[in-house]
Image (cartoon, rainbow, N blue to C red; front, top):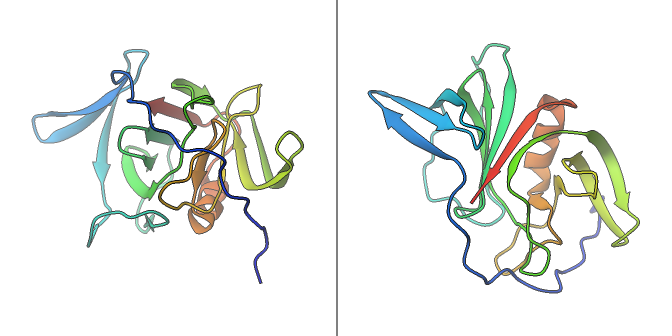
Length: 179
């Protein structure tokens, strides 16, 4: 039995993405994530990807990763969300993002509010495991992540991944969204 019933998207994103606002670059043997504000964070992936990521798929492995600052990186051009703790990648997922007339904003956003069983009054839609990023309602939330779907500006992630995120993120966690 499904906990939430998803409504299909009314449109898909088709416009080309603007230039990237942040990136990961290799410095020596260490990857460094450069945020839009110019700060840098060393990163390392512990995840073993056995096959290419597909819509609805995710990988999560935080075994052996010590406590530390958690932050999220969303690359709209690759449709990937990565979760880091103390500079080590502990999760990654394919995402949905905003359709052409309701684009997902880019930049660095602190998580403003969290709601496990949130329902959007604007769209009359369930938004489980909501991590709100903007005052006007853009959020990361559980979704039916399938090819051809888009959001009204939010970042949709698979339900299982959303549950993991909800467990490790707290208000104030930084989310960097780039193109």
